Image 1 (cartoon, helix red, strand yellow):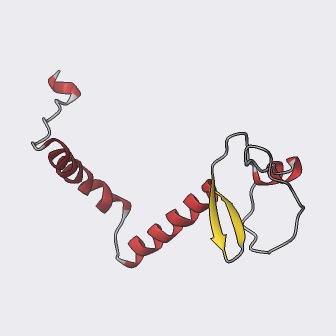
Image 2: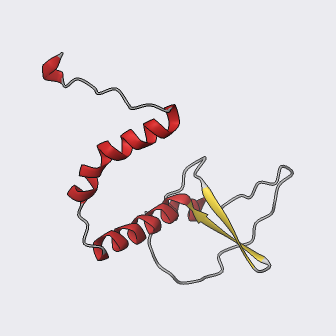
Length: 108
């Protein structure tokens, strides 16, 4: 399972294959919970590259968004009540008209 340890540590050396692929050694894939096809963000830092599993980047983004919303005094319920109107605005922008109202299950 992945940990959120911020320690920088040299792990190993790997090579770029003919198709530009890098191999992450099995023990590190297992330690980070990475399966075949796991998406990575590739960041450039000076002359180096940082490979960051997308799940970790997503978790960090969620934490940042949560902090901003908490600081603004917004709750989950506040956000959920805005969804229908936001959905209607997106629909109108995309299709140039108001979104048809869905009938509730009771009306069907």
